[in-house]
Length: 407
DNA sequence: TCGTATGATTGTGG
DNA sequence: CCACAATCATACGA
Image 1: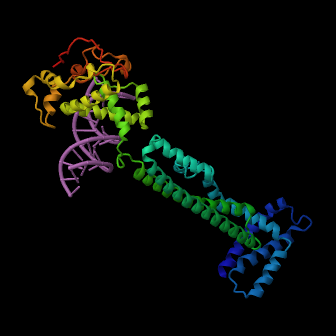
Image 2 (image 1 turned 90 degrees about the horizontal axis):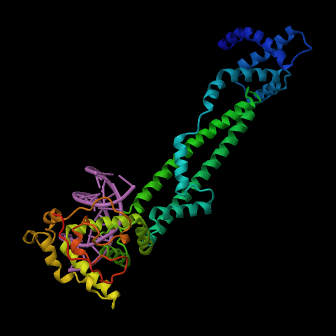
Image 3 (image 1 turned 90 degrees about the vertical axis):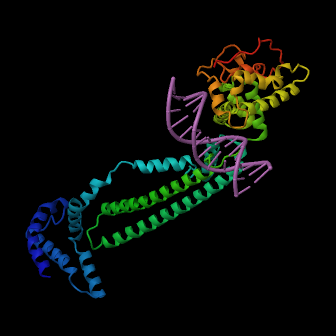
Protein backbone atom coordinates (compact mmCIF):
# COMPACT_ATOMS: atom_id res chain seq x y z
CA UNK A 1 0.00 0.00 0.00
CA UNK A 2 2.74 2.32 0.89
CA UNK A 3 4.48 1.41 -2.27
CA UNK A 4 1.42 2.22 -4.17
CA UNK A 5 1.22 5.55 -2.58
CA UNK A 6 4.83 6.31 -3.22
CA UNK A 7 4.52 5.29 -6.79
CA UNK A 8 1.53 7.38 -7.08
CA UNK A 9 3.37 10.39 -5.80
CA UNK A 10 6.09 9.63 -8.31
CA UNK A 11 3.53 9.44 -10.99
CA UNK A 12 2.74 13.01 -10.42
CA UNK A 13 5.41 13.65 -12.94
CA UNK A 14 3.92 11.12 -15.19
CA UNK A 15 0.66 12.86 -14.96
CA UNK A 16 2.32 15.95 -16.14
CA UNK A 17 3.94 14.09 -18.88
CA UNK A 18 0.64 12.61 -19.80
CA UNK A 19 -0.71 16.04 -19.79
CA UNK A 20 1.44 16.66 -22.78
CA UNK A 21 0.26 13.57 -24.46
CA UNK A 22 -3.37 13.77 -23.67
CA UNK A 23 -4.29 16.53 -26.08
CA UNK A 24 -3.33 14.22 -28.86
CA UNK A 25 -6.20 12.06 -27.89
CA UNK A 26 -8.58 14.92 -28.03
CA UNK A 27 -9.71 14.64 -24.52
CA UNK A 28 -10.89 17.17 -22.13
CA UNK A 29 -10.56 19.94 -24.63
CA UNK A 30 -13.15 22.01 -22.95
CA UNK A 31 -11.89 21.63 -19.41
CA UNK A 32 -9.32 23.51 -17.48
CA UNK A 33 -6.07 21.57 -17.35
CA UNK A 34 -5.87 21.57 -13.56
CA UNK A 35 -9.13 19.77 -13.31
CA UNK A 36 -7.99 17.30 -15.86
CA UNK A 37 -4.86 16.56 -13.95
CA UNK A 38 -6.87 16.08 -10.86
CA UNK A 39 -9.15 13.58 -12.52
CA UNK A 40 -6.35 11.64 -14.10
CA UNK A 41 -4.66 11.52 -10.78
CA UNK A 42 -7.77 10.07 -9.25
CA UNK A 43 -8.04 7.38 -11.81
CA UNK A 44 -4.42 6.47 -11.55
CA UNK A 45 -4.67 6.24 -7.87
CA UNK A 46 -7.58 3.93 -8.17
CA UNK A 47 -5.67 1.79 -10.61
CA UNK A 48 -2.63 1.64 -8.42
CA UNK A 49 -4.49 0.72 -5.34
CA UNK A 50 -7.12 -1.52 -6.72
CA UNK A 51 -4.97 -4.62 -6.74
CA UNK A 52 -4.01 -4.19 -3.15
CA UNK A 53 -7.48 -4.00 -1.91
CA UNK A 54 -9.35 -7.04 -0.95
CA UNK A 55 -12.71 -6.67 -2.43
CA UNK A 56 -15.72 -8.79 -2.34
CA UNK A 57 -17.33 -9.46 -5.62
CA UNK A 58 -20.02 -6.89 -5.36
CA UNK A 59 -17.56 -4.25 -4.41
CA UNK A 60 -15.28 -5.17 -7.25
CA UNK A 61 -18.05 -5.06 -9.75
CA UNK A 62 -19.10 -1.74 -8.47
CA UNK A 63 -15.61 -0.34 -8.78
CA UNK A 64 -15.05 -1.83 -12.15
CA UNK A 65 -18.24 -0.27 -13.26
CA UNK A 66 -17.27 3.09 -11.89
CA UNK A 67 -13.95 2.86 -13.64
CA UNK A 68 -15.43 1.73 -16.88
CA UNK A 69 -17.93 4.48 -16.87
CA UNK A 70 -15.46 7.16 -16.15
CA UNK A 71 -15.27 9.51 -19.06
CA UNK A 72 -11.50 9.68 -18.88
CA UNK A 73 -11.17 5.98 -19.12
CA UNK A 74 -10.79 5.55 -22.90
CA UNK A 75 -8.11 8.15 -23.11
CA UNK A 76 -6.14 6.78 -20.22
CA UNK A 77 -6.57 3.36 -21.66
CA UNK A 78 -4.96 4.51 -24.90
CA UNK A 79 -2.09 6.14 -23.14
CA UNK A 80 -1.36 3.13 -21.05
CA UNK A 81 -1.56 0.92 -24.07
CA UNK A 82 0.89 3.09 -25.85
CA UNK A 83 3.32 3.12 -22.98
CA UNK A 84 3.04 -0.58 -22.68
CA UNK A 85 3.65 -1.02 -26.34
CA UNK A 86 6.70 1.17 -26.26
CA UNK A 87 8.24 -0.58 -23.33
CA UNK A 88 7.36 -4.23 -23.29
CA UNK A 89 5.89 -5.13 -26.60
CA UNK A 90 8.50 -3.50 -28.74
CA UNK A 91 11.00 -6.03 -27.47
CA UNK A 92 8.90 -8.84 -28.73
CA UNK A 93 8.18 -6.95 -31.85
CA UNK A 94 11.81 -6.98 -32.79
CA UNK A 95 11.84 -10.75 -32.66
CA UNK A 96 8.68 -11.17 -34.55
CA UNK A 97 9.95 -11.03 -38.08
CA UNK A 98 12.07 -14.07 -38.64
CA UNK A 99 12.90 -15.81 -41.88
CA UNK A 100 11.18 -19.09 -42.62
CA UNK A 101 12.94 -21.83 -40.76
CA UNK A 102 15.08 -23.81 -43.19
CA UNK A 103 14.69 -26.87 -41.05
CA UNK A 104 10.94 -26.58 -41.26
CA UNK A 105 11.17 -26.10 -45.00
CA UNK A 106 13.26 -29.22 -45.29
CA UNK A 107 10.75 -31.18 -43.29
CA UNK A 108 7.90 -29.82 -45.34
CA UNK A 109 9.64 -30.66 -48.57
CA UNK A 110 10.36 -34.14 -47.45
CA UNK A 111 6.84 -34.74 -46.27
CA UNK A 112 5.50 -33.55 -49.58
CA UNK A 113 8.01 -35.59 -51.51
CA UNK A 114 7.10 -38.68 -49.55
CA UNK A 115 3.45 -38.05 -50.12
CA UNK A 116 2.67 -37.58 -46.47
CA UNK A 117 1.81 -33.94 -46.63
CA UNK A 118 0.50 -33.90 -50.15
CA UNK A 119 -1.82 -31.20 -51.39
CA UNK A 120 -4.89 -33.35 -50.79
CA UNK A 121 -5.66 -36.76 -49.47
CA UNK A 122 -5.95 -38.27 -52.92
CA UNK A 123 -3.02 -36.33 -54.22
CA UNK A 124 -0.97 -37.37 -51.27
CA UNK A 125 -1.83 -40.96 -51.86
CA UNK A 126 -0.79 -40.88 -55.47
CA UNK A 127 2.30 -38.96 -54.55
CA UNK A 128 3.16 -41.71 -52.15
CA UNK A 129 2.62 -44.25 -54.86
CA UNK A 130 4.82 -42.26 -57.17
CA UNK A 131 7.53 -41.98 -54.61
CA UNK A 132 7.35 -45.70 -54.09
CA UNK A 133 7.45 -46.42 -57.77
CA UNK A 134 10.34 -44.07 -58.28
CA UNK A 135 12.30 -45.62 -55.50
CA UNK A 136 11.76 -49.11 -56.82
CA UNK A 137 12.08 -48.34 -60.46
CA UNK A 138 8.72 -49.89 -61.07
CA UNK A 139 9.84 -53.32 -60.20
CA UNK A 140 6.88 -55.64 -60.33
CA UNK A 141 8.66 -58.18 -58.21
CA UNK A 142 8.38 -56.19 -55.05
CA UNK A 143 4.77 -55.24 -55.49
CA UNK A 144 3.94 -56.86 -52.19
CA UNK A 145 6.48 -54.84 -50.31
CA UNK A 146 5.24 -51.78 -52.01
CA UNK A 147 1.65 -52.28 -51.08
CA UNK A 148 2.83 -52.97 -47.59
CA UNK A 149 4.97 -49.90 -47.70
CA UNK A 150 2.14 -47.84 -49.02
CA UNK A 151 -0.17 -49.12 -46.33
CA UNK A 152 2.31 -48.17 -43.67
CA UNK A 153 2.88 -44.83 -45.29
CA UNK A 154 -0.85 -44.24 -45.42
CA UNK A 155 -0.96 -45.03 -41.75
CA UNK A 156 1.71 -42.49 -41.05
CA UNK A 157 -0.09 -40.00 -43.21
CA UNK A 158 -3.31 -40.61 -41.37
CA UNK A 159 -1.68 -40.13 -37.99
CA UNK A 160 0.07 -37.06 -39.23
CA UNK A 161 -3.09 -35.48 -40.52
CA UNK A 162 -5.08 -36.41 -37.46
CA UNK A 163 -2.47 -34.94 -35.18
CA UNK A 164 -2.16 -31.86 -37.32
CA UNK A 165 -5.88 -31.37 -37.21
CA UNK A 166 -5.87 -31.84 -33.48
CA UNK A 167 -3.16 -29.26 -33.07
CA UNK A 168 -4.94 -26.87 -35.32
CA UNK A 169 -8.14 -27.27 -33.43
CA UNK A 170 -6.40 -26.92 -30.10
CA UNK A 171 -4.59 -23.88 -31.38
CA UNK A 172 -7.79 -22.28 -32.54
CA UNK A 173 -9.59 -23.09 -29.35
CA UNK A 174 -6.80 -21.79 -27.24
CA UNK A 175 -6.45 -18.69 -29.34
CA UNK A 176 -10.13 -17.97 -29.10
CA UNK A 177 -10.00 -18.53 -25.41
CA UNK A 178 -7.08 -16.22 -24.93
CA UNK A 179 -8.58 -13.58 -27.18
CA UNK A 180 -11.80 -13.67 -25.27
CA UNK A 181 -9.98 -13.50 -22.03
CA UNK A 182 -7.90 -10.58 -23.14
CA UNK A 183 -10.93 -8.81 -24.50
CA UNK A 184 -12.63 -9.36 -21.24
CA UNK A 185 -9.62 -8.09 -19.36
CA UNK A 186 -9.21 -5.19 -21.68
CA UNK A 187 -12.11 -3.65 -19.91
CA UNK A 188 -10.02 -3.18 -16.84
CA UNK A 189 -6.51 -3.52 -18.13
CA UNK A 190 -4.78 -1.58 -20.84
CA UNK A 191 -4.81 -4.17 -23.55
CA UNK A 192 -4.84 -2.87 -27.07
CA UNK A 193 -6.14 -4.92 -29.98
CA UNK A 194 -2.63 -4.93 -31.25
CA UNK A 195 -1.48 -6.67 -28.15
CA UNK A 196 -4.15 -9.26 -28.54
CA UNK A 197 -3.03 -9.79 -32.09
CA UNK A 198 0.47 -10.19 -30.90
CA UNK A 199 -0.57 -12.69 -28.33
CA UNK A 200 -2.32 -14.63 -31.03
CA UNK A 201 0.81 -14.79 -33.13
CA UNK A 202 2.77 -15.89 -30.10
CA UNK A 203 0.31 -18.68 -29.51
CA UNK A 204 0.44 -19.66 -33.14
CA UNK A 205 4.18 -19.75 -32.99
CA UNK A 206 4.10 -22.03 -30.01
CA UNK A 207 1.77 -24.35 -31.80
CA UNK A 208 3.89 -24.14 -34.91
CA UNK A 209 6.78 -25.41 -32.81
CA UNK A 210 4.69 -28.35 -31.71
CA UNK A 211 3.68 -28.89 -35.31
CA UNK A 212 7.29 -28.93 -36.28
CA UNK A 213 7.99 -31.62 -33.75
CA UNK A 214 5.18 -33.61 -35.26
CA UNK A 215 6.65 -33.11 -38.70
CA UNK A 216 10.04 -34.13 -37.48
CA UNK A 217 8.85 -37.33 -35.92
CA UNK A 218 6.76 -38.06 -38.99
CA UNK A 219 9.83 -37.63 -41.14
CA UNK A 220 11.72 -39.95 -38.89
CA UNK A 221 8.98 -42.52 -39.13
CA UNK A 222 9.01 -42.28 -42.90
CA UNK A 223 12.76 -42.62 -43.00
CA UNK A 224 12.62 -45.71 -40.85
CA UNK A 225 9.88 -47.10 -43.02
CA UNK A 226 11.84 -46.38 -46.13
CA UNK A 227 14.97 -47.97 -44.86
CA UNK A 228 12.99 -50.96 -43.76
CA UNK A 229 11.01 -51.49 -46.91
CA UNK A 230 12.92 -49.91 -49.68
CA UNK A 231 16.45 -50.76 -48.81
CA UNK A 232 16.88 -53.29 -51.53
CA UNK A 233 19.99 -54.54 -49.90
CA UNK A 234 18.11 -55.72 -46.91
CA UNK A 235 15.26 -56.96 -49.01
CA UNK A 236 17.17 -58.57 -51.78
CA UNK A 237 14.98 -60.39 -54.20
CA UNK A 238 16.22 -62.65 -56.86
CA UNK A 239 15.23 -61.65 -60.30
CA UNK A 240 12.65 -63.75 -61.98
CA UNK A 241 13.89 -66.82 -63.76
CA UNK A 242 12.91 -65.32 -67.02
CA UNK A 243 14.85 -62.17 -66.31
CA UNK A 244 17.94 -64.12 -65.35
CA UNK A 245 17.52 -66.16 -68.48
CA UNK A 246 17.37 -63.10 -70.65
CA UNK A 247 20.36 -61.55 -68.98
CA UNK A 248 22.36 -64.72 -69.27
CA UNK A 249 21.45 -65.06 -72.89
CA UNK A 250 22.68 -61.61 -73.57
CA UNK A 251 25.80 -62.13 -71.52
CA UNK A 252 26.82 -65.33 -73.18
CA UNK A 253 25.93 -64.24 -76.62
CA UNK A 254 28.14 -61.23 -76.13
CA UNK A 255 30.75 -63.02 -74.17
CA UNK A 256 33.62 -61.42 -75.96
CA UNK A 257 32.28 -58.08 -75.01
CA UNK A 258 29.66 -58.32 -72.31
CA UNK A 259 29.19 -54.61 -71.99
CA UNK A 260 25.73 -53.73 -73.10
CA UNK A 261 25.25 -50.25 -74.37
CA UNK A 262 22.89 -47.92 -72.65
CA UNK A 263 20.19 -48.79 -75.14
CA UNK A 264 20.82 -52.48 -74.73
CA UNK A 265 20.62 -52.06 -70.99
CA UNK A 266 17.37 -50.23 -71.29
CA UNK A 267 16.02 -52.89 -73.53
CA UNK A 268 17.09 -55.62 -71.14
CA UNK A 269 15.71 -53.70 -68.21
CA UNK A 270 12.39 -53.36 -69.95
CA UNK A 271 12.27 -57.00 -70.93
CA UNK A 272 13.28 -58.20 -67.49
CA UNK A 273 11.18 -55.76 -65.55
CA UNK A 274 14.12 -54.39 -63.66
CA UNK A 275 15.92 -51.10 -63.63
CA UNK A 276 18.82 -50.15 -65.82
CA UNK A 277 21.08 -49.90 -62.81
CA UNK A 278 20.05 -53.39 -61.83
CA UNK A 279 21.05 -54.53 -65.27
CA UNK A 280 24.35 -52.78 -64.78
CA UNK A 281 24.77 -54.41 -61.42
CA UNK A 282 23.94 -57.73 -62.87
CA UNK A 283 26.50 -57.40 -65.62
CA UNK A 284 29.06 -56.12 -63.20
CA UNK A 285 28.55 -59.06 -60.92
CA UNK A 286 28.35 -61.45 -63.80
CA UNK A 287 31.57 -60.34 -65.38
CA UNK A 288 33.49 -60.48 -62.17
CA UNK A 289 32.11 -63.83 -61.15
CA UNK A 290 32.53 -65.21 -64.57
CA UNK A 291 36.16 -64.31 -64.50
CA UNK A 292 36.58 -65.76 -61.07
CA UNK A 293 35.31 -69.09 -62.03
CA UNK A 294 35.69 -69.54 -65.69
CA UNK A 295 35.36 -73.30 -65.84
CA UNK A 296 32.01 -73.29 -64.24
CA UNK A 297 30.98 -70.38 -66.30
CA UNK A 298 32.10 -72.20 -69.32
CA UNK A 299 29.68 -74.97 -68.64
CA UNK A 300 26.99 -72.46 -68.21
CA UNK A 301 28.06 -70.82 -71.40
CA UNK A 302 27.68 -74.12 -73.12
CA UNK A 303 24.21 -74.50 -71.75
CA UNK A 304 23.23 -71.17 -73.11
CA UNK A 305 25.00 -71.84 -76.33
CA UNK A 306 23.08 -75.06 -76.68
CA UNK A 307 19.88 -73.26 -75.90
CA UNK A 308 20.58 -70.67 -78.48
CA UNK A 309 21.43 -73.34 -80.96
CA UNK A 310 18.19 -75.10 -80.24
CA UNK A 311 16.34 -71.88 -80.55
CA UNK A 312 17.90 -71.29 -83.92
CA UNK A 313 17.61 -74.79 -85.15
CA UNK A 314 18.33 -75.22 -88.77
CA UNK A 315 20.62 -72.26 -88.90
CA UNK A 316 23.57 -74.33 -87.97
CA UNK A 317 24.89 -74.44 -84.47
CA UNK A 318 28.49 -74.97 -85.28
CA UNK A 319 29.40 -71.69 -83.75
CA UNK A 320 28.25 -72.79 -80.36
CA UNK A 321 30.18 -75.91 -80.23
CA UNK A 322 32.31 -74.52 -77.52
CA UNK A 323 31.83 -77.43 -75.25
CA UNK A 324 34.08 -80.11 -76.47
CA UNK A 325 37.28 -78.30 -76.97
CA UNK A 326 36.60 -75.68 -74.45
CA UNK A 327 38.54 -77.03 -71.58
CA UNK A 328 41.46 -77.61 -73.79
CA UNK A 329 41.29 -74.18 -75.14
CA UNK A 330 41.21 -72.75 -71.73
CA UNK A 331 44.11 -74.93 -70.73
CA UNK A 332 45.92 -73.45 -73.57
CA UNK A 333 45.10 -70.00 -72.50
CA UNK A 334 46.27 -70.63 -69.06
CA UNK A 335 49.35 -72.46 -69.86
CA UNK A 336 47.86 -75.83 -69.17
CA UNK A 337 49.06 -77.21 -65.93
CA UNK A 338 48.90 -73.99 -64.16
CA UNK A 339 45.22 -74.20 -64.15
CA UNK A 340 43.59 -75.66 -61.13
CA UNK A 341 40.27 -77.06 -61.97
CA UNK A 342 38.90 -77.38 -58.50
CA UNK A 343 36.02 -75.18 -57.71
CA UNK A 344 36.67 -71.79 -56.33
CA UNK A 345 40.35 -72.25 -56.36
CA UNK A 346 41.03 -70.94 -59.79
CA UNK A 347 41.29 -67.52 -58.36
CA UNK A 348 44.82 -66.38 -58.66
CA UNK A 349 45.79 -68.36 -61.65
CA UNK A 350 42.88 -67.21 -63.62
CA UNK A 351 43.19 -63.70 -62.49
CA UNK A 352 46.67 -63.63 -63.78
CA UNK A 353 45.67 -64.93 -67.13
CA UNK A 354 42.82 -62.76 -67.97
CA UNK A 355 43.11 -59.62 -69.90
CA UNK A 356 41.37 -56.82 -68.16
CA UNK A 357 38.82 -55.05 -70.16
CA UNK A 358 39.93 -51.65 -71.32
CA UNK A 359 37.74 -48.77 -70.44
CA UNK A 360 37.07 -47.61 -73.91
CA UNK A 361 34.22 -49.41 -75.53
CA UNK A 362 33.49 -48.00 -78.87
CA UNK A 363 29.85 -48.34 -79.45
CA UNK A 364 27.35 -50.93 -78.48
CA UNK A 365 28.23 -54.56 -78.33
CA UNK A 366 26.09 -55.08 -81.33
CA UNK A 367 28.52 -53.08 -83.29
CA UNK A 368 31.44 -55.17 -82.33
CA UNK A 369 32.74 -58.22 -83.95
CA UNK A 370 34.06 -60.85 -81.64
CA UNK A 371 37.57 -60.54 -82.81
CA UNK A 372 37.82 -57.10 -84.11
CA UNK A 373 40.38 -56.32 -81.52
CA UNK A 374 42.63 -58.08 -79.14
CA UNK A 375 41.54 -56.20 -76.10
CA UNK A 376 38.86 -58.63 -75.10
CA UNK A 377 37.52 -58.14 -71.63
CA UNK A 378 38.47 -61.55 -70.39
CA UNK A 379 40.64 -63.72 -72.52
CA UNK A 380 37.70 -63.57 -74.76
CA UNK A 381 39.37 -65.19 -77.68
CA UNK A 382 38.32 -68.65 -76.74
CA UNK A 383 34.78 -67.49 -76.66
CA UNK A 384 34.77 -66.34 -80.17
CA UNK A 385 32.04 -67.93 -82.05
CA UNK A 386 29.74 -67.50 -79.13
CA UNK A 387 29.55 -63.90 -79.82
CA UNK A 388 27.18 -62.96 -82.47
CA UNK A 389 25.62 -59.87 -83.70
CA UNK A 390 22.51 -59.52 -81.70
CA UNK A 391 20.59 -62.74 -81.80
CA UNK A 392 22.01 -63.84 -85.04
CA UNK A 393 23.62 -66.95 -83.74
CA UNK A 394 24.06 -68.46 -87.09
CA UNK A 395 27.46 -69.83 -86.29
CA UNK A 396 28.59 -68.87 -89.71
CA UNK A 397 31.41 -66.86 -88.43
CA UNK A 398 34.40 -67.79 -90.44
CA UNK A 399 36.73 -65.87 -88.30
CA UNK A 400 40.17 -67.28 -88.05
CA UNK A 401 40.97 -69.60 -85.25
CA UNK A 402 41.55 -68.86 -81.66
CA UNK A 403 43.60 -66.03 -80.64
CA UNK A 404 46.06 -66.36 -77.95
CA UNK A 405 45.25 -64.09 -75.15
CA UNK A 406 47.65 -61.55 -73.94
CA UNK A 407 49.41 -63.02 -71.02
C1' DT B 1 20.85 -74.89 -40.19
C1' DC B 2 24.53 -74.33 -43.18
C1' DG B 3 26.77 -73.34 -47.49
C1' DT B 4 26.21 -71.30 -51.73
C1' DA B 5 24.04 -68.04 -54.95
C1' DT B 6 23.05 -63.56 -55.86
C1' DG B 7 21.67 -58.64 -55.95
C1' DA B 8 23.36 -54.48 -53.95
C1' DT B 9 26.75 -51.44 -51.91
C1' DT B 10 31.23 -49.62 -51.02
C1' DG B 11 35.84 -48.28 -52.05
C1' DT B 12 39.28 -47.51 -55.54
C1' DG B 13 41.33 -46.19 -59.81
C1' DG B 14 41.22 -44.06 -64.18
C1' DC C 1 30.92 -41.47 -64.16
C1' DC C 2 32.13 -46.25 -65.14
C1' DA C 3 34.28 -50.65 -64.28
C1' DC C 4 36.16 -53.53 -61.09
C1' DA C 5 36.99 -55.91 -56.73
C1' DA C 6 35.64 -56.85 -52.30
C1' DT C 7 32.13 -57.22 -49.26
C1' DC C 8 27.53 -57.27 -47.27
C1' DA C 9 23.05 -59.18 -46.49
C1' DT C 10 19.65 -61.87 -47.90
C1' DA C 11 17.50 -65.88 -50.57
C1' DC C 12 17.42 -70.45 -51.27
C1' DG C 13 18.31 -75.35 -51.61
C1' DA C 14 20.10 -79.53 -49.39
